[in-house]
Image 1 (cartoon, rainbow, N blue to C red):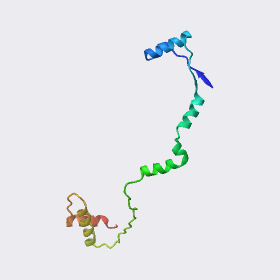
Image 2 (cartoon, one colour):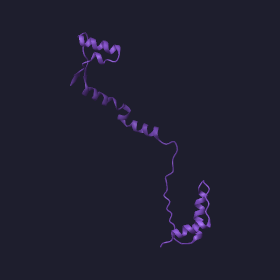
Image 3 (tube, rainbow, N blue to C red):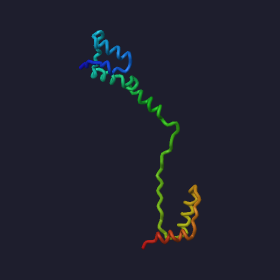
Image 4 (cartoon, helix red, strand yellow):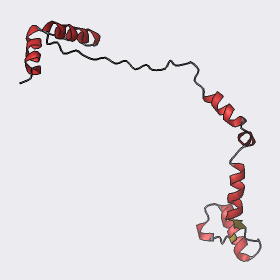
Length: 122
């Protein structure tokens, strides 16, 4: 259903808007009418391009967003520590972890012994 616009001269933001509002108020110009439903339907028609209606748009979008290089699939690596209770294995593991870090790590025998004591079941 068309809706008639009633301009207010005092709310006009530019000189052109004030002039148009005065002309409509005096009857010199016809007030524009707005059909919101028809405008909405027209906007819906324009929101989808012809390419998208044929299915070619999907192919074009996939080609445009496809990665430039193929990435290998991630492989799950499962590791399981075997409980042996051998302090030498713990020291070797600590040395291995310490060497993989970028920072400097000092693992002393005292630190290993303290960790072994804390790790023992009571």
